Image (cartoon, rainbow, N blue to C red):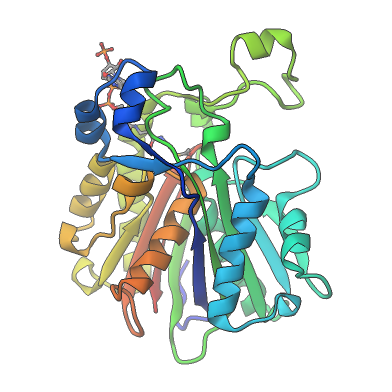
Length: 331
Ligand code: ACO
């Protein structure tokens, strides 16, 4: 979709990362793996682990409060709160309503959850843009919060090394001086749904003793297949938004890709003709935080001065579903 003139912008971002660090060295003691294998095959050195008593409501609320403080916005002025998570604290009610209460965004706000796995944050930004453009909201809060360690099988060496916990947030408001979302592109293909799933615990396959024994309530992933699909889909979406925004690879100041695997990031950058010096990577410190990866990366990039007024940012993601997408923004 083309946006000739941006209607919505990110006014501020925020993040929250739990303190506890789980290193590759520690994982060596837990499963049959080595520090070297993890670093070489994924680029991950360590990841954050939320304490047992901390769920996505708390992590998401803290990221949201930091974004609100930066934008100097009172939580009561939020018109809409969208939360993306694949790991809700409970199935009912929505995590967005829990975060709404936790931050005091009560008054005029509506709140709902959006589930598009790792692509969730980009899907939610586009949803926020639509509400702002349509005049239904002045201020939308988007929160992406994930406790991936709560759905990991700690005996499965091919998945437990990849994921971490964290939350990111963004305030979306009307564009003022031509800054904001230039173009976005979202797709999904449910034919690949079985490549990354939690088979049990839902309506079709409720949790019972047999499911628990088989660990069917935890994440199962076909990593190699996802890897191949991810590069093609993310790079294709990135190229599409650059075309829609009338931009070339060299116009991009920073590529902020989903942080799943350094080899996926490098291939995506190569396909998009963007040198690695212009690619933001924090995967080494946090692993894959699903939908929270991109907002945490954006917040760090702004803080480090890599993104500032006028910067052109390209961001791209893929995840379970499969879902994928990209967005070009002028900061
Ligand atoms: N340590 C040592 N060996 C391992 C480990 C490990 N932690 N994990 C797997 N291996 C072994 C495998 O058993 C296999 O051994 P074999 O050849 O004897 O069978 C060998 O290493 C190679 O396995 P591959 O799966 O081919 O390894 P690959 O290079 O593809 O790396 C990985 C695996 C890291 C999972 C990679 O495929 C990947 O990153 N895929 C993308 C996954 C992803 O991003 N998923 C998230 C989607 S986002 C979302 O929605 C949550």
